[in-house]
Amino acid sequence: MTYALIPGAGGSAWFWHRVAPLLPDAIAIDLPAADDSADLTTYADTVVTAVSAVSDPLILVAQSMGAFTAPMVALRVPVASIVLVNPMVPVAGESPGQWWAATGHDQAVPDFDPVEDFFHDVPAAVREKALRQGEPRQSDTPFGRPWPLDRWPDVPTRVIQGSDDRLFPLEFQRRVVSSRLGLELEVMPGGHLMALSQPAELASRLLSRVHKIR
Image 1 (cartoon, helix red, strand yellow):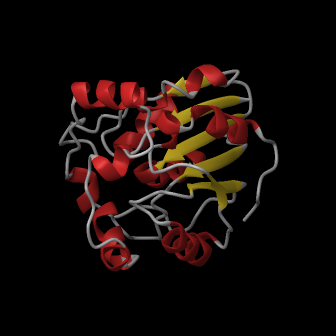
Image 2 (cartoon, helix red, strand yellow):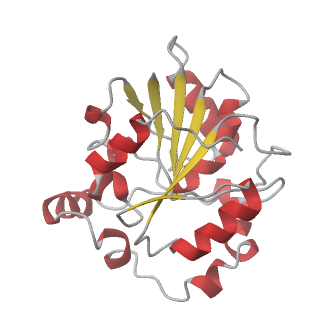
């Protein structure tokens, strides 16, 4: 298996630097998130290019906003499965910017501290390194354009959710994932940035061959 690791907002492959070495064959992908001319289709193009030489069965692993990109890729290249990690699950015609109100996120999470609530369970050394790098710039462009698919692709899909994700709380995600994908969550310890806080546990789950098929 080859694992294509798709980051969330900010598009930084560094997000996966603690997980990628624990997988037998992994490609951590940088998305052009800072480019104001890049939309979701551009993100999908970037992933397709990154996996163009892969001949092994391909597993797309998508963090958070990466859930908008992974299914677009799955319609363009052969994919064995999709694994979503603390995802923003889209529906047809919905932009990432519309997702928040459409899912009732503001009611579920009225207040959020982008440092403490993202990094509350990340080891201090990793947290300090991330903060020294600064937050990757994320263009507003993809947030204003609709997800172009009319349905989720017919690909085995799993959803791994952190039990202590403060951005997408557990019960909020149970409701959203159930209504949009008809799937149950695979819950593991960790917050929103589990690739940084729980890399061994996350890698172990990614290596599992048990897929919940929608």
